Amino acid sequence: MAEPTRNATLTLDGNTYDLPVMSPTAGPDVLDIRKLYGEADVFTFDPGFTSTASCESAITFIDGDVGELLHRGYPIEQLAEKSSYLEVCYLLLYGELPTAAQLADFEARVTRHTMVHEQMHYFFRGFRRDAHPMATMVGVVGAMSAFYHDSTDINDPWQREVAAIRMIAKLPTIAAMAYKYSVGQPFVYPKNSLSYAGNFLHMCFAVPAEDYVVNPILAKAMDRIMMLHADHEQNASTSTVRLAGSSGANPFACIAAGIACLWGPAHGGANQACLEMLREIGTVDRIPEYIAKAKDKNSGFRLMGFGHRVYKNFDPRAKVMKQSADEVLGLLGIENNPTLQVAKELERIALEDDYFVSKKLYPNVDFYSGIILDAMGFPTSMFTPIFAISRTVGWISQWKEMIGEKNQKIGRPRQLYVGPPKRDYVDVRHR
Image (cartoon, rainbow, N blue to C red; front, side, top):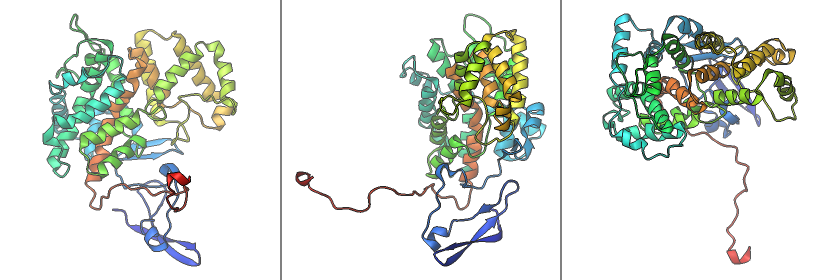
């Protein structure tokens, strides 16, 4: 628990109130206003909670001004270069990088939990074939609590641990099943001999009629995509998971709530929107037309995949993702793809045009991840489910951290009421 380092003074209606100031390990100082309502009978107003720290956390830190992302203190660039997704999962869950023995044990536990209960296969058949995979995932993940009763007691540390491993292991299987179901192909069971990312690719693209060999470059690119989306501080879906968890809801319900929030186009759907925009532009010669629209405040058009709500500098994840994009596209020999040509020209303009540079509208992680996933053969409807797989470990880590807080309370935001004041009921005959 952070301790106050000094006080700030608020003067209101002739009265003064001391507000403790707490200093984090990194980032701006925080005013503690927990007692303000009780002492001064006032709330604070902060739509979107963009200036409010809703919790203490030791998991992820973002400095948007300098373009920095740290997981437990480790820069994302170093992790992307030297680590793997499952090692980052261990880091997020337990706070430190694992030893070789700890990592091997963790990987084995995740690998042995990748299969889902056989009866869950029937659950999928209740959905329409054309259901969006995210709609399917929200339902199936929420229903996991009906299959795994032995890991729903949030007060039991061991059950919390089992639930965490199960969701990290089974989300790729569930997402792959949602994809297979949407295209009318049979489900493919997981293979324990494959890596986490390789196994997901196998479950998505293998068919019983022929062998499917996972390309190591594609598996590495998928591993990076997952790693770069593993956690991102108190974003909308993470805050949703924490809020749901604060009520004492079981972990599967909390993660299903996070998936539902992630589905929003302003959050997890950004890479899909970016690729659709690139396809709408179509060819390089149409780019000036869309650049002009983007600069015109009255056009209602905005370029997707540029800039970020938090990062006011280059998104550190985008640098790594660009490298993966070059590797994947080179491997697949599709550098001359029209959509890719549009993307490359837009990228060049964004890094050189004074308008984009002055507003720091650099290509972000969504700009590159959509291109990679499209090149791998995924339809745009699968982009957000892959994001959900990746972010599951972040949600679980944040949920476990919240459950472990000594003074944990149910989330209960306040409001600035602007409706009618108190009034008396009028009988319908006199209205």
